[in-house]
Image (cartoon, rainbow, N blue to C red):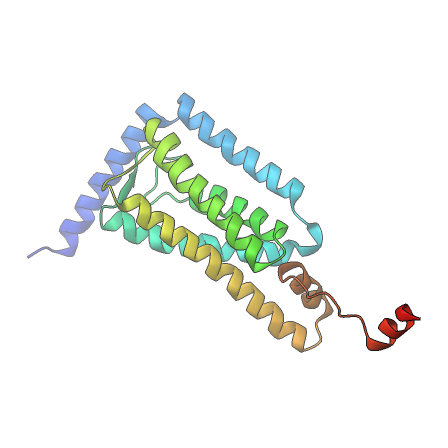
Amino acid sequence: MVTNNEIMQTSDYLKALVTTQWLNEQFLSPIWFGLVFLILFSYALVFFLMDKKRITEILLYGSLVAVALIVYDSIGSYFGLWVYLINILPIMPNYFASHLTLIPLYAMLVYQYTFSWKTYLLWITVWAVLFIFGFYNYALTNLGVFTYLTPWAKYVDFTLLLLEGIIARGILVTLLGMEAKRGNMASKASLSNLIAQPALKPSGNLDDEDKE
């Protein structure tokens, strides 16, 4: 029988190992500095490009992406689908590098700059491909920062990342639509940026005038 005390002792031992490794091998290493620079650069870039008139809405979208990512990534790590080998901070699990920064930040740009479901689905797919197969499976894996532990784990990761992006936008469109129906003009304006509006059909009177 495994007792709570045994679990706590094992947890303390694991924490000590992680902290020791982080201090001796990861902290202030070139890769660690590279990750920190990438995070700071991404924050600065996204803040510069962000539509300040829609900042609350865009941040809410990013928060939905971040929360969903944390949930499914925790499950994937627990079941041994992937593992993080270098972390910004010596804490487990460590979500700062990607879950609370890179992935949500660049998802917010996709959300901001797409004006219909068609264009959003196209660019959110490109976003997911670049992150999973480019950033994670190639760049971070070759740098020894991250690795997939099974051949099919990257496809699971890609599918879940894509789904969470689609669901997050669907939630925002639904909420904005509810507010717009209740007369919220700001929500109407935001909704018009997310869903392409059909072109107005010329009236019959105008057609008659044109014939004349």
